[in-house]
Amino acid sequence: TVALWVKLFREGRDAIQDNRRSGRPHQFLASSLDVDSRWAVRELAAEVGVCHKTVLHILHNILGYRKIAARWIPHTMSEVQQLQRYAIAQDLAHTTDTVKDLLRRWRWEILQHPPYSPDMSPCDYDLFAKMKEPLRGLRYNTREEIILAVGWSLLDINRCGRANGVQHLQIWQKVVHMGGGII
Image 1 (cartoon, rainbow, N blue to C red):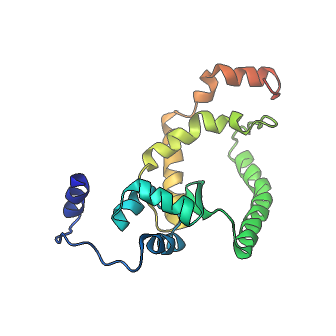
Image 2 (cartoon, helix red, strand yellow):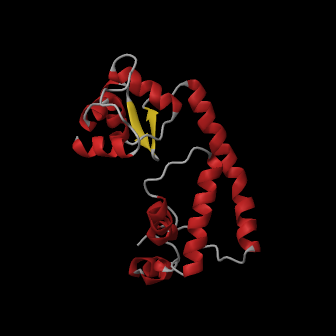
Image 3 (cartoon, one colour):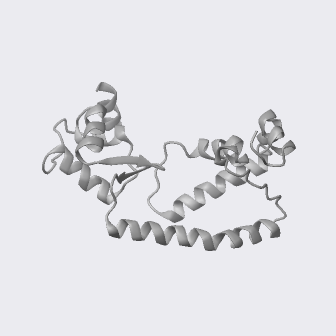
């Protein structure tokens, strides 16, 4: 599209010829996702030079990928991928006590999670949206860059006193009144 070309020229591109690509679009997409699984569909479409619907068709129907938690993953995972996923889940179980200790040291109130209702998490109501807003559209190359950006975002929310939206929600008050039970 014209907007894409304008953007490319503003970013320093000076040639109108397509970039060299090896193989068919699905081979290029597969190799791109092997390097970084956090691509947006529109970014992949611009990179390959096809419309985003074609990219979606290739990802879902030819490569068997689906997007989970902002990453494109194969629908069926290899044994290595399954073992990596298991190792991560094990690591998370060991960090919860560390996180709770840190929150206690900071004298932050730990809000209990209602049983069987992950969608009722207080952070889902207000905090995550405010935290993600300044980060929207940015890409990071390292884990450290992500941690730093999220940290600055949370500091800004705390400094401005904007992390109070859960107190204004009637449904959350019902959950508190029910003692965390199902409404």
